[in-house]
Length: 348
Ligand SMILES: Cc1cc2nc3c(=O)[nH]c(=O)nc-3n(C[C@H](O)[C@H](O)[C@H](O)COP(=O)(O)OP(=O)(O)OC[C@H]3O[C@@H](n4cnc5c(N)ncnc54)[C@H](O)[C@@H]3O)c2cc1C
Image (tube, helix red, strand yellow):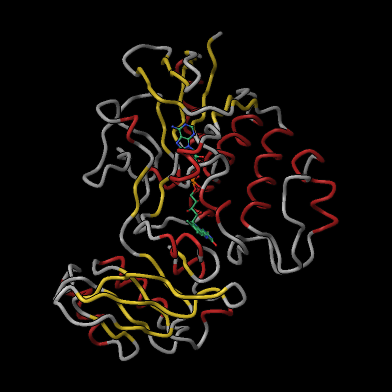
C-alpha cells in the first residue's frame, strides 16, 4: 500500500505535522522511533527532546496550574499509568508530548514504533526502510527527526540532568533554582556566549568554562562576553566533575586545568552545556542536501521544502537557530500544509 504522507519523528514537529495531515484527510503514518538502548543513550527515544525535561514554562497555553483532571481524561489510561503523577506547576515535557501524540491519534494518525534507517528518494513513490527491515512507500515524506544536545559524557553530568545540568538556557534559565545564583556554561563558541549572556539576566555570576586561552566565538560575540560584568571566563579549564547531592542537585563543579594548574572547585547551582547539537540526519546523508553543520537544508525561504520535491523538513533537524518546541511545532504545521498542497497539485 502506498501512503500519502509518512512522517519521520515524534517531537513537537512530528506530532504537529500529524495533527494537520490527519485533519486534511491524508491518513498520516508516523514513525516515532524505536525503543532501544542506543536511542536511550543518545537521547532520541520516542517523544523527542521535550520528553527529557521537567517543567515547560514557555509553551503557550500551559500556564502553571494543576493539570491532573485534564490529563486524566485527555490521555489514554495505558499511557497515563507509565507517566509520573502530574505536578501542580503546569505541564511537564513528557505530559506535553503525550498530549500531542494523543491529539494526533484522536484524528486517526497511525504510529509505528520503529526508526527509519534508510530512504530512497530517487523513485516516486519514495521508499523508506524501517529498523524492523520492512519497506514502506509514500508519495510525500515529512522529516521531523530533531536534533540532540551534545554532552561531555561524564557520569556526574548524566546523574544531575534536570537537577541542575541543562543544555538549554532559554528553556531552563528562568527556573527558580538558577535565579541569583552562580552558574557555569561549558563551551567557547558563539552559542556558549549566547547561553552565558542569556543566563546573566538571572544568575549572580556566569562562569564560562573554556579549554583554550581565547574564545572560539566570533569577535563580536567574544566582545559581548568580555563586556558583560556578570560573565567570568575561566580560561584553560575543562569540566572534570559535576558536584552535588540527592537533596539539592548540582552544588558545584570541579575544574581541571589544561595548562597544568591544580583542580579548582566553584560553587554553582547549574551547569549549562553549550558544546553544540547533532541533528538526527545521518540516515539522510547523500539523500537530501544538508547544511555545513549537517542539518537538512530548507531550499525556499518561509517554506519547508527540501532539495527533493515531495520531501519536507520540520523542526530542529532543519533549524539550528531557534530550537524551541513552539518553533518546531510551527514548522511541523507548515510542512503538513506544504505536503497537502504539493499532493493536491500532483493529483495524488
Ligand atoms: C533538556 C531540554 C529541555 C528543553 N526545554 C525546552 C523548553 O522548556 N521549552 C521549549 O520550547 N523547548 C525546550 N527544549 C527544546 C525542544 O525540546 C526542541 O526544540 C524540540 O523538542 C524540537 O522538536 P522536534 O520535533 O524538532 O524534534 P525532537 O524533539 O528532537 O524529536 C525528534 C524525535 O524523532 C525521533 N527520531 C529521530 N530519528 C528518527 C528516525 N530515523 N526514525 C524515526 N524517528 C526518529 C526521535 O524519537 C527523536 O527524539 C528543550 C530541549 C532539551 C534537550
